[in-house]
Length: 164
Ligand code: FES
Ligand code: FES
Image (cartoon, helix red, strand yellow):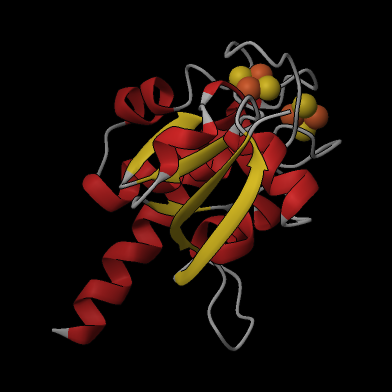
């Protein structure tokens, strides 16, 4: 099968991958880079389990053609903890607020929420709900998930106050 070589930034590091031209970004994460945080649920852009951030926006990596990633900046769930290993405020809030049940939707939920909080640090509950409207949770933990994202937003506020 014809291959393509793509160079992009992955979790802050420059990377190059040579993979079949038909692969998606999700398949490239999982099978080339062995990053398994983004999950394959539906594979057709409907469940959000594969959500990652590309140039600031949450995208479904299962639908993202690998040639289009050239030159872009990608963040996956593996890239949001600090360099010292401290969990991201969203990861902490999901744990503290019981926002995780089986966990299959969790990385996608967190990446959608991270894209929201990066662009809007003080979202309303409606904005939080809209941000995860493309993420399905089969364990029906939506209330805890929405509350966890709100909790993380408050933490972001506190951190901003501390640094002023
Ligand atoms: S696996 Fe990508 S949206 Fe479902
Ligand atoms: S925690 Fe199981 S699918 Fe969401």
